[in-house]
Structure formats: C-alpha cells, structure tokens
Length: 261
Image (cartoon, rainbow, N blue to C red; front, side, top):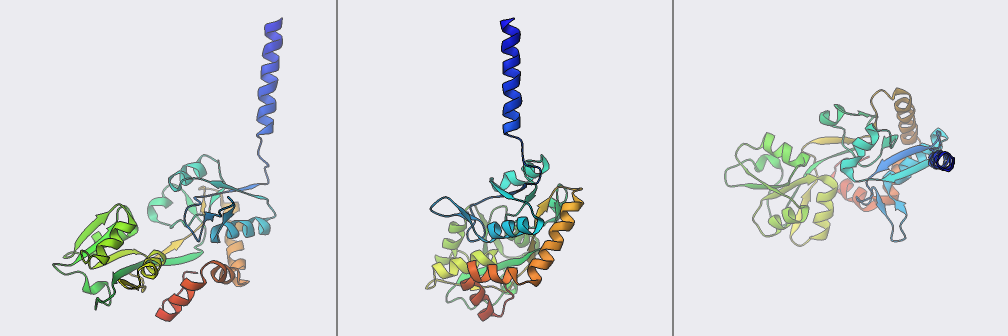
C-alpha cells in the first residue's frame, strides 16, 4: 500500500512539476546569441540590450504577446527553433540558401555587405585591384567573406584565419593587402587602428538579415512581415540606428555608402 501511495505522490509531483514548467501559450519566445554588440549583448548589470533586443520587444508589443528572450549559442539557434524551444530567431542572422533548407525567414530587415580593411597608406580603391598574383587577402574561416573570396579571386592568395584579430594584424603588419569581412566589423577595426588602417565600405556583396522561423509557420511569418513593414514606415529602424549605431551611420554617410537599415 505504501508503495502505491508513494507511486501516486511521485506521479503527482511530476505532474505538478510539469504544470509549473508549462509555457504561457501566448508568450513569444525569441532566441538570440547575446554576444554581438551593439546588436545583441548584455549590460554589466546582466540585462539584455541592443538592436535585436529592442526589435524583439517591439514585435511582441505589436502582436500583443509577452516576450521571453532565450540566450543561446549561435550554432544552437536553428536546432532550438526546429525543436520548438523558441518561436523565432532575431540574432543578426543572414538569410542564406543553405539556411533556407532547414528554416524559413521573414522579409529582410537589415542589409549589410562585405567590405575591405586595407593599410592606411595603401592606394587600393577596391576589390578589382586585389585579384593579382602576389596579392594576399585575409579572411576569417567559415565566413561569407571566405566563400566570396574563394569564388571570385583567381590570382590572389586567400589567407584564411580563425580569429578576426589575427586577420587585422596581417593587414597592420603588411603581410596581407586587405581583410575581407562585414562592413560593420571593418569600420570598427579601422576605428580601432586609425593610424594603420582604413575602411573601404562599398559592399562587394550585399547580404540581408532576417527573422528565422519554423517552416510552415505561415501565420506568424505573415504577422512578422506586417510588423516589419509598419515598424519601418513609422521610423522604428531609424530610431534604432540613432540609438545604437549613430557613429557608424555618420561614417557610412561620409563614404556615400547606404547604411545598414
């Protein structure tokens, strides 16, 4: 009898535990990797902040749904989406054909591109001057910069490195003629090393960030696309740019390069 009673208590405890962990069906769970400032990061006090964080909360407000952020490694975002742990991904994710094979995407909300970091005194004006014998282009392993370089440079040496900082140092030390990476990072590195480097921000390849969704979740996709259209029309992205990216925005304007939003 005690065994039966104990079994009942354990079963009840499991049921109550499950109920305690039950998710609010109206909650919008947004996955992001909070390690890429100023788009998604954590304050010294431990609070999420950045462009993606504000965008997620604006989306939740528009949909009338409370938002819960799940901080996940970037490589874990798509698996978490596919298994239902999160409802969508807002994490500076590029919409690529490879990713489209496993998840769906919203309309793009940000446009960025590949740019070049070159030595301060280099006369180089663009990528067309790089594809020559004796030239070296540094890239970061596994990035769209490496993919683009290998597909488009037939004569230049492509030097693939694990770390962004290593690629920057190759340019500073004169071992590489350029570092091919995303516009925002190129600008930031040029700002960090103004005496040694400069940024060529004109994009070699344009890429789009979008919100990741499960395939078949057309209702949510339609709601998100409607939100993005309205948010943009109401100046929401302009405000985010002014709040988090004012210096970058001004630098891009001086170069005559369209800003990311």
